[in-house]
Length: 473
Image (cartoon, rainbow, N blue to C red; front, side, top):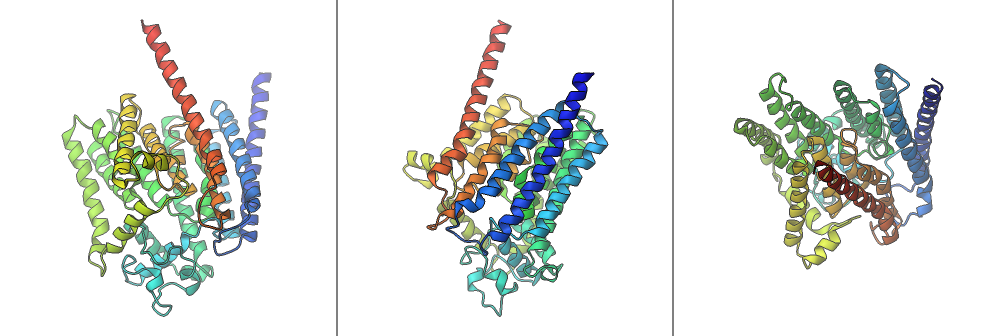
């Protein structure tokens, strides 16, 4: 009894410490926003990021210990846990949005401009911002002048454009001078929906709701969504919903399986029309349905049909999606930032883009095959794939890791969890006056712990498998 009471007290203290760490991190974001030169500069002293890094790492550590303890012994009821996790997450996000301006990234200005463009009846893919005169611009000059790479057409896909336009119809400049608060609050609503989805799924499965805190209380979504206003949540929410629906089909007693599969396809289409990162996940899904051709057809039909519906309006607008295709080609062939393995793979292929992409595709396919061979569930497969895709990518910004973090409550992986901490070192690129390049020492600090964790986990898994085989003999 005394031991249980002590455990409860320690767990209470750890939860309280984690909430204090969240408050400290939000305060650091407010301080960073107040002292950071705007619009987004280069050559900023790395010392300006130190409070951000310290509070980020402190929250990461406190959260790790809290979840470790609460998963084993929660001092709260399920209902109380649900509302505690959700309330703290909402307060942290709302405070960050209201008290800061976009600091570590300037992508949001493109969202605001795109939204105003489509809301005015124009095609956002038709003309680059640099080619639009102030008189013709649907967005205010203060917004247009902050857009990065203004000579390029927008790269954001149709679902993002529709949502940008809907937010723009709310007249965002009415509520804040530049309109970023309205956009960030809208993205926070999607983020809260993600947290609720996690909590409800975990409750239905009988799993600890504290696993959802790994995302809800993590500093990354607080800074990247509520702070910088990244739109990735628009694609993460339907992806998680699609995976949950598909996972439910594994139950033999599930009602209306074909309807669920049909909506799974629609949700995948919504996610793909924000960012196509999840497209290869169709391979393991189709493999799991290999003995059910009717379901394979239904899933492919549903996804393809809805994707066409989402893209179709832009095909009939002046300029169609030509600008989108051109910018996407530029991004995939010429841009690189914070890459890990990609430069070394390019050396192997003598810098041939085609051969490098084929090699990456082969590695990703191998990852999916191994995951299927181990009979992992769809969440684990998705985590393995997205983790590998990030490590193999030419460009890995911190907000890209949100896609990985969102899967961790469904399938915890220590190496992936560690990556959500070290990824923040990518922001040292702001200190480089020559361009957005992460200095090599920071790049090593960012990736070496991750690869070390992957190695340890792999050795452990192989050893465990060997021991089981010996025991069976």
